[in-house]
Image (cartoon, rainbow over all chains, first blue to last red; front, side):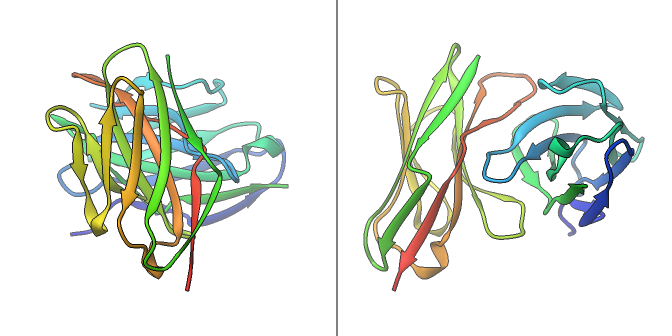
Length: 113
Length: 115
């Protein structure tokens, strides 16, 4: 049984560009959350998707947007990249009724030059 | 609003010694509490969690933590450190009950184990 898979594993972009990160949840999970982990910091909650809608959002600007597809996979989009967006982006999945039990992927390391 | 404070960004212990990683939280509602471990270039793995019931929680790899409401603490312990325990550890809190389980993490404590 595959766990949470994220792609790509590494990405290099320049300021002002746009980026799309992808996540496939663990089998049987229907809820996807995204976190940003800056170097030396704990992960920060970006948003959560369930039933193809954004359900909760952390303190992130509108440049950060997402999508969930009918197969429960998800995308994170970041527009107008800033140097400060350089971070490890983690996807976590969970299931209805057990949303406190998150399974994390290995993340996408985004570098903005 | 919730917050997590992990005392000590870096802790070193000798192999076989007691591991104690400290976590204090602030929450306006009864919390759920978690400890996660992160190995280099990997995602987060759940060590243990407190939701309701017994306040002493046992997790994987011999770790345990005790929820102390009066002290707003959820310290992580392991009686005897092993070299494979070297990693970064994160304490996290979320509001209890039905909801989004949006986690608020501390800044992490890097554990080094000295042979």
